[in-house]
Length: 568
Ligand SMILES: [Fe+2]
Image 1 (cartoon, rainbow, N blue to C red):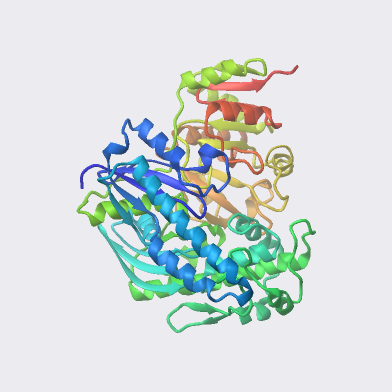
Image 2: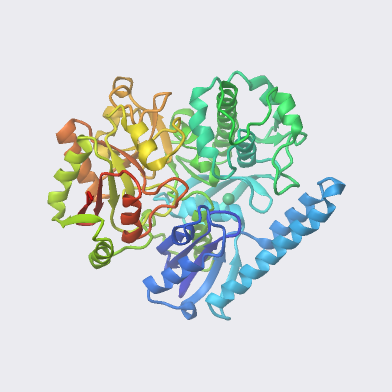
């Protein structure tokens, strides 16, 4: 297939665009990184403009556009769904459908506006986009593929087999029976924002007793003979409402009212989170086993928003027959921009399975850009340019002594996780560090854990997990003897969401981890994304410096510059 393929994902949450040429992903960014609006769902015009500028092309060079879902099928589902609503919702039914129809019409005209009239526009089924992203970016030629999310058009869960350049569907579960929607409905019930607060519920789960609500919870679904499940829709309303996910019967069944965002978090909320996570894993592993029984292979490729459930993911190798697990850096809808484009490439005669593993697909800024930003803010900061070999020992010493360091380099990461290019780093051994990072920088709920980066060669000494975790998508046990010594990254249940860092994946972080090993005995560093509460990850040097000045971070490293605050 000739020319460039533009992949687009937008309209629901985490909009993104990606550019593909000859099967190679050249670049991909979430739109939120440009607009600063978390989970921005708007048409990714800023990302597309950046892709054009970065790769020196224009809309005339695009041969095909791959959109990450199928509007016709999606509108069909929305039309049928809203009809399930009560008669008093009649007016809203019309509004919901009209709004969605208009949204897709607008996207289509925007696509032609930013490309050309001769493009081939492909609408790729949503779960196929997810499956294609995880399989085609994996290093595996054959794999079983599982995609689990809220909902695409009709599908909420799909089971696939991939070989070479082809993916075939084996089974599906349709709306409203959805693991993603179940998790989001409980996220809402527990007073958090759906599509955002699921991490908080996952973080809360280890504080609770999963048995407390188990019997009641099991009234919410029935198991089907094909490895799937059906939700009892007596308790949920998301199948017809676009604003509410559950009804008052859910609280009555559970015996507790739904929590409001400002309410205290009490033990029943923790117990309910624990039950939800427990039951998610129960249903998820039935699907994993079902997939293996349908088409056995060594490898499981996982995608869809639920692939961010690191707690379940960390148990796949232990609890299933799969020997390898591949979860790409952006398994949620953002990654589907890449998935849809790669699917279109292979469907139209493309043959080259390129190495598309890198998560570093976003904007890069030169030293000149850094200097310009520093000049603009020179009244507030002091800086020094150093050789890379000089920076590593200085920063290792700072981290060891308890300083919190902003770390900015290279191309921005694609996906929700900071993987060493837009990160905040700190000492995982310091018992006060979790509270300090939370208090002065992230301002997150105190119960949420921070994640560690670990030098891949030393991983098994500290963690009970033998395989590499390149994108921080698996939660694994911290070995018993190290838990007390790594308090800032060890969760209450003795687990940690690790990133294994190899020299090949990230040379500078790998060197930093080696230096830390020498300096304090731990080749491990606390790593959290470079942003303040409710902000998106910093994009450019200027935003990085401004963010640094806005909080109590001690030191900032951008490329070869070590930056400190001027004390006025
Ligand atoms: Fe999705």
